[in-house]
Length: 123
Length: 274
Image 1 (cartoon, rainbow over the protein chains, first blue to last red):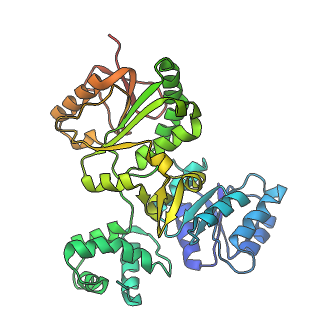
Image 2: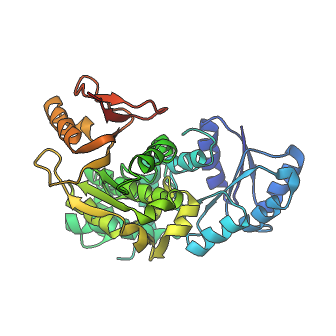
Image 3: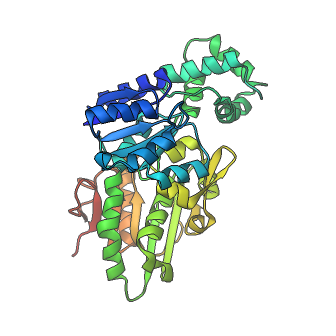
């Protein structure tokens, strides 16, 4: 399985990459939504994207909207992993097409349980 | 109770080293709110004093409690999802058919901790079984620990708690933000009656039960107590009622009057027909 981790923080990308590779994912990293779309245009659809919200260029919300408008990325699961913790933010992300939402800070268990809710990774 | 940046950095490193939890910049409020109870309990005048005590000693009980305060507890929403799949696909449909005459269902979460289990069940009922809105559904949740029971009654959960296992659509639908925490809706809260029960002592008078949830509880008792508790459960279960245990628990070799129900991956039991 393949995952793309999209965050402008190198530290967060490293943590998520380590968590995901530990459960068997091949992980691609991207620094922002634009970078992620460019990479996906090259490598094609992945199983799941872990998406920060606040990033330069194309933010996480805009990335979700862009992915859901692109039929070539149909079926990709989108999980926000973000410091945005207001109810309106969660609702907006889901309405835009995100499948799950993790609020930072998070633990490995949080990520695993959310992946399980999406029917991927370990239960 | 402001936390100086150097102290925040210390706590952040401690938590990260011990639990791999990442506390982002700006999460000082989280550290402040979570460590407040430890300050009070231990008599520290400030977070700086607490952090100074942590810095001055090797890792010991106080460090552990600080880390635990910033991590999660034993329970979580929809813990062991196959259990909730079985409720959705098999148990509640079966009970709705079986109880269609008297239109009553009684549930008991016997060790509900801070409430995530009974609230998960309540959300399932609300989401997937609207027919029950016209039935009498008694949903009792109990625990020995008064503190967690009080928390469960309040229905207020931290950000970390709602992060764990709770599908985001249900968060949006049934919770509202209260400061840095999240409160479950009054509608869901009113579905549950919380009660203090010591499983190892005399039980209050319960109605006949259709489902008893006793997950990850029996493991803490000796065999005689397990046997006594299982015997009491048999006496309060309605015919065809279910006992739900934790994934590592069984009635086998403790009470042979139970039999396992053939649901995949989950330990549900019924009293054998005689």
